[in-house]
Length: 161
Image (cartoon, rainbow, N blue to C red; front, side, top):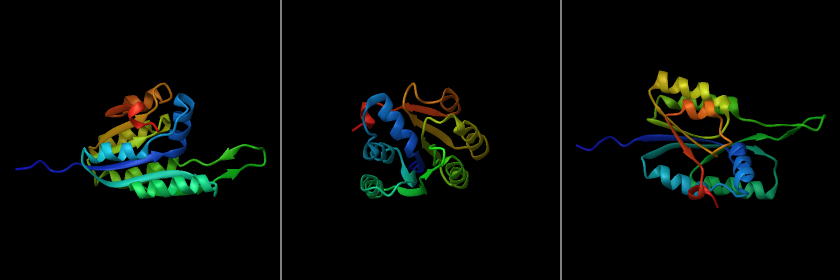
């Protein structure tokens, strides 16, 4: 009798991954390589990428590439405040989606280095019994996030363009 196929959901904090890969490696993240690796481990039932919409051509090409790879791209508008600071983060939206989806999968894969997600991972492991895998840039991923994950995978050459 065959073991059941593992159901996996992927959640990408696009801004976090973009800036941490840029700051550490001066390179881009390879979403295609990630998707291929995860598909080799089970069936990807959800793949969500959370990004900020600025409407520029380069970003639209990137978002279309993500869709082509198999991601659903969720966009929020980029907000420039009057004081010059900017707003645009998806933390709450990611949390809501993870909580909604966690009971229907075996593994949640989160791409982020943001320690704000540590409580989320603790909760889904405890309450939903799922594996929580984090992909993040070493040295730029919160220790609390790493500690709350079941598995931590450092983004290295394998996942860079």
